[in-house]
Image (cartoon, rainbow over all chains, first blue to last red; front, side):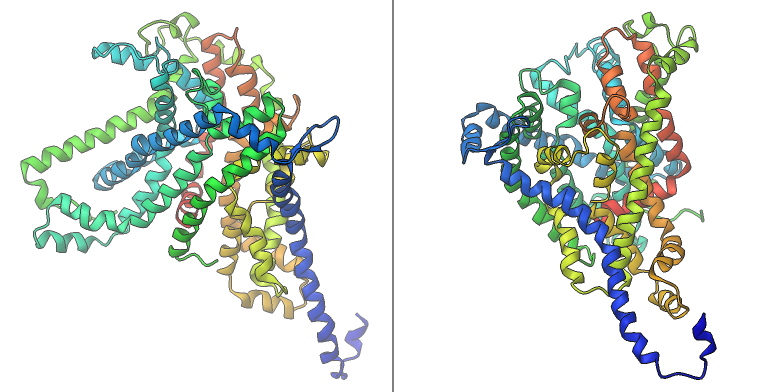
Amino acid sequence: MEQTTAVPISKPKPQTQRPGKYKRYMWGFIFLLPAIVIFTLFLWLPIFKGVLNSFYNVDFVKGDTFIGFDNYKTIFGDRYVMTAVRNTLYYMGLALVIGFWVPIVFALAISEMRRFQGFARVAAYLPYVVPFVVLYGVWRWLYDPVGPINSVLKAIGIGQINFMVDRAWSMASIVIMETWQSFGSAMLIYLAAILAVPRDWYEAAEIDGAGIWQRIRYITLPAIRNQILLLLMLQLIATSQGFQTQYAMLDGGPNNATLTYALLIVRYAFVRQDYGVASALGVLMFFGLSILAIIQYRINNRGGVQS
Amino acid sequence: MKAHERSIISDYDLKKPGIRWSYYLMNLLVVIMMSCMVYPILISMLNGLKANKEVNSFPPTFFPKEWHFENYTKAWNYIDLPMYFKNTMMIFLGNMVVTVMVLGLAAYALSKMRVPFRTPIYYYFLGTLFIPATTYMIPNFINLKDLGLMGSFAAIWLPAGANAFFLLLLKSFMDGIHVEIFESARIDGASEIRSFFQIAFPLSIPIFATLSIFVFATAWNDWFWPSFILNQDNKPLSSAIRDFVLNARRLDLNIKFAILTIVTIPPIIIFLFFQKFILRGLYLGGVKG
């Protein structure tokens, strides 16, 4: 306020600019500080603690004791670890075989619809907003031996399937349920990409005599190639860490048929209270998954996102 | 919409009977898919209106023989739904405040302010994207215990600010705002805080709206993590449903379905109202990863 009276003086200006610049740096740091603190406390700290804990016997009461590689020895001596790895790979594979192609097919089909496209989109996406806990409750009943799916199977003469109890079916049942819930979101991503393909490419192909399958094979699929790759990676990353559905629906049963690797981590931690082994399992998992993460980063960057 | 645009199949193709019938078949397939999508949602609403005996009967019926609307009253009173709903909203609002205050400020600083070591700091944040969350889930739990946050909302709120993906989305959105606006604000003597709250934040409302959908979905859906972190009286709705409804032994099936329906309706309504934001969020999440 007092400075407004000192109008004729223009000399001090360059002098005030220095502290101003300094102050601006200070504000930048102040703005970044909360994020730096929070990322350190809640991401980097646990990540490094995880590596550290994997060499300790973690005990909340008596304190941690250093035990070298004993946790890793426990893991390699546990036969359930192999079961869990196998189940996880099986789960990832099943999710590809049962679920991955579904959104592509329906995106193609819906893009061809001449009426009610909007309805089809909303209907396909609707299950995605159903909360997981509701999903578990409803599908337990759908899969029930006397539930609707089995009554349809009986009506068409296939006979009863014990979706949840049968070891051969339990993982597939989970994948079918998850596909039901989540394919809508992937479908919308494909659909947007398909609708962005210039229409005259099809026109040109048709004039050149390309059939419908050839148009899909040589125009549409190459046009959505990036989306296919990206969603493939996202699905692999998600399914390789999957455990919540297996835990909530079957608790890893029947007879460990749905015990995934991440569920084994949860079991070690919260059932056996062996946090050291659980951390070591996490470290091993990181090395297994980092390959996936690197590939995803590559694909992302090619998609044209600035770092 | 304007007159029909051609797609893969042209009008000429449709004149051939073989293609026409496969086209009808394909439409039928989509209709079947749509009914498969809607059926489980509708049936759980209707099951909530049936007598318990009817829900357990085989083969299952679609429409109730008698309508028991009182099931929904019973369901409402079975557990303290308003309290758990309040907890979910507390988590949502707290997470949102942290997202704006921590990630919003950081994204603004990275995008529009001159900070030394900007790139290393940015990579310090983004590096966390390469480490899958499940691998440090247990250390994370121990860490929250060590920090003494266990059982308080802060154990959910504060880590909500450690989201590199949101930071990435916010920064790339703010990169699109012209820097001249902030320069003229600076010349007019606005402080950096004021530039953020009165210029950057209002201009970034679309991206914050999109993020709020993500944050809401997480608050409403996440049951596993909160059930280990929070207490009996501040756990969110979905954890409560999982603990007291899904695993309840002596709860009648019709009441169970009524409760599940009550929990499903708010997100469905939100989806139908905010479709535009949700779909944009989806594309951001899917396309930019």
